[in-house]
Amino acid sequence: MISRSLPLAGIRVLELGNYIAAPTAGRLLADFGAEVVKVERPGVGDELRSWRLYSGTTSMLYRAVNRNKRSVELDLRTESGRHTALDLASRSDVVIENFRPGTLEGWGLGPQQLDDARPGIVLVRISAYGQNGPLAAEPGFAAVAEAVGGLRALVGEPDRPPARTGVSIGDTLAGLYGAFGALVLLLHQARDPDSPSLPLAERIVDVALSESVLSVTESLVPDHFAYGIERHRTGGRIEGIAPSNAYRCSDGSSVVIAGNGDGVFLRFMNAIGRPDLASRADLAENPGRWALREELDAAIEEWTSARPRSEVLETLLAAGVPGGPIATAADIAADSQYAARSMIQYFDIDTGAGVRRVGFPGVVPVIGGRSLPIRSLGPDLGEHNQEVLTRSLPEPTEHPEG
Image 1 (cartoon, rainbow, N blue to C red):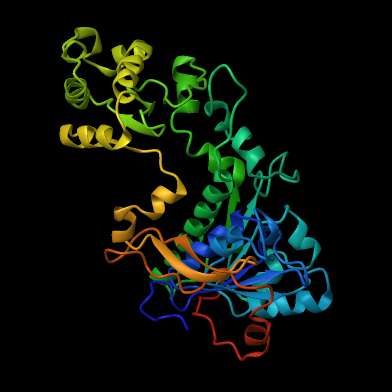
Image 2 (image 1 turned 60 degrees about the horizontal axis):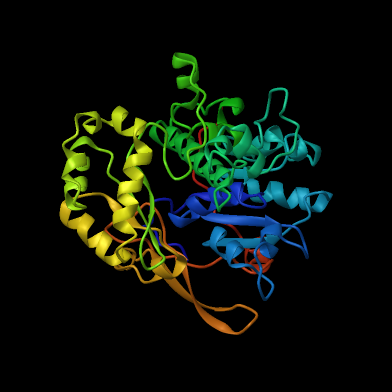
């Protein structure tokens, strides 16, 4: 059962999502105590169950993204599934979905039907391009959104085709914005409970994957307008900032070093035995260092490549220079900082190849000094059919009716 001490205890969420984006929004709310009921297709479930599946029937990806939720099976294309979904919505504060725009409306589960079932409900809609505009009806996954949103053009080496980050970052960003939008509207309702509820159109959180990506590209677009600059891929660097890159060590591992602050740069160069670089006027400020980035990176890697990673990091720490290992999963599992904050939490799981002790990332952000505990991993398909679909559900929190 959900502890009443969790910040979102008492908030009920109906998740109609699939894949990563909407389930991430649901997971964030569930992590902090919301009761999240995840609707999945009968017999098939969320397709994420089979993504990155190495053995068994349910991937660790699904278990991680859908933790702290309940799973029920409903066919939303049928009249009985529609009726049950509306019944669940009538007892929910938030509905989250990530179907192509118009899909819910075609099933008789559009915003008006949901609002009729539960006046004041908050609806989070996540799609490739948003609910309106010339591209609204087009399909699109995070890979496309990362390209359209401007991120893909910035990732990779300049002499190679654009690369992708190793995770579906566009989906995760959209999920973060979806959860944030839901909380903004819930807070608005809670702060003024005696006023009429917002109009339905203002209770729809419209999250586009492409816009979520665009929002984290910093000054990509303003630089284009202000200076006529078209940014390009710079590999491990970030344009205009130096030295900041990944460097190889003698033991085959690598580190990232961010020695780009003016004062930090002086300490960095002295620490690696290059006071000549520390004293040069043309390297005193960042624009000059960026212009001479190749020279600087060569000097830095000459130093790192002659030393094991542990020695490199110890030297940087002693000099007050930001740096860290390029960590593998094994590095993360052994990291004392993560352990101190309970950021890797362990569960015994039947993986299909036997029961193993499996670590999962903890709850972010930390409240109270350590990660909140993960209450349960992503459930088996339909695990909570009996509990959710047959029980007498508690009434949801009160929303004012318009």
